Image (tube, rainbow, N blue to C red):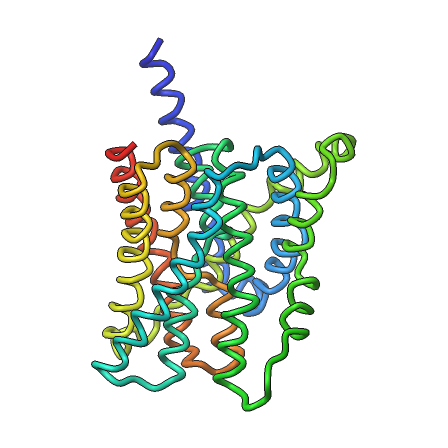
Length: 313
């Protein structure tokens, strides 16, 4: 009986990781073979951001039983961001770097890829039951990106003053945030008639997001930025989740919620953070290398963190 269950779980994990690998490889190969236009990922990203991620919010958020236990996944992105800002501020005092590079590192190491990579990996390691916790971390990550992150990028690139109205406008125009707000506001029974449709749309997230990631992977010129990459990815993949692990241990937290909080903290740099850095000319090459190399390394490091978490659970 137990061996059958173990084989079923192992087979399910294997299938999920085969899906992850195939989707990323397909995107990378089709881009390198020039079967798809160079900017084809933009259209896929529009579907993911405007359709798939909102559907995931509507699928999981209405069924969450809110409690104080959900505080950790909600504050985790803020802790990771503050740690990123602090470590690169201190690093630049000891080893001076230009402001554009420091901002690019703060953005990419301070914001995790909690949806494009995070959701598929969490479904692979932990299954559907872990998704509500992951969605909370992802939404807070987006809020940090859209407020503090965007303000930092715009302030670095422009002398114009960024107003609160600019920040609020970005929030209310971002579909995943709107869907999150609807999901926590609308009664479950009102969603019941469209649940099958929401499920189908949410199912498109993992393959399309990973396909898009594969198309955007690029590693050219990484040796010139090796020092910055080492400290940036060292923080994002190792130090940031260690901070969350310390909180879990000190607070004696147990169960799936703290595990997913740490697992999301261990994700690769956020693709959107790299896009923002590129848009505002904040060392675009470094930002893209942080994202591309970080995604590949995160497949190894998240596996390590998974087994570390099992030891503490």
